[in-house]
Image (cartoon, rainbow, N blue to C red; front, side, top):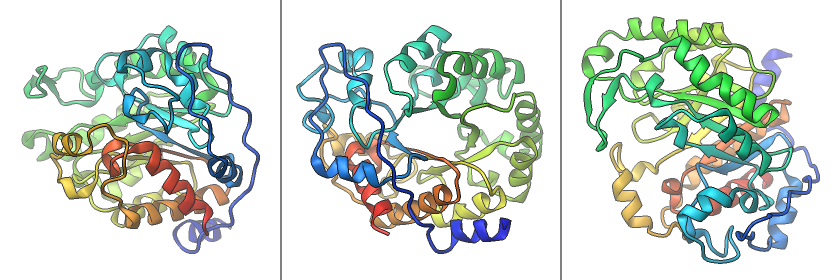
Length: 341
């Protein structure tokens, strides 16, 4: 049975489970949702309730007409736009990235959870205090070694415990996204694996959602890394980023860890290169158009999502504006690819 499920995931796509989407909460503030398109409502009804698609965050004024009914400032959307975002029929998840820069309080997680319906899920990045080997200046330059890199106590107390208490059953994935290692540490990768293993073993198994690890150095992606994750019950976060191999070359890690939830963050279109965030931001402007579609990545990701959820496992997928130009349009296109099988 195990082999059959594994083949379903990485071979022919599993059948799609059809469900009616639960009613989303109505916004109680000045940010109103854009009226849902009938096609989006129909598409959402075709998706399995195990499929949670969303964007990497939600505070973009340029999504007017796609997500928001009117024009709003980025500050207002960040503070009060989440309920309107969650009213969109295809947006069943969202990323919380701001905790990467400073750990969030339980009350902040609770406030987010109160703004979304019960079926909604969050993908949350761990603080850089834990996941970055360097202490960085405001411009992102590494200044000195970080003495708290992969510290188990900090990870538990400043991140996991707070997120669990504040988000509860609305956790999709808690993601430890390891920043690129400086050359001296990358040359001693076995030591970093031991530190990561110790951190993950210190964390509790979640009642809801998954703990996952995302990397930015391809050197991590080997059998030892898979064994480490398997031993600790941790998921590999499929990182779609030019610093890593294409999606097809990362799938062996998912196979090695099967069965389990799919966690994926589609961060940056490969055409921009490994350091292309600023280039992408300049090109995509208001993030209101899909300027650089990537149908190959989308089709492969859709196949993995279908296989995962068809075998009864959840999928938590968040997409950045910098993946194709507009994250809500990428979510719609991915949902269409999933349902087209």
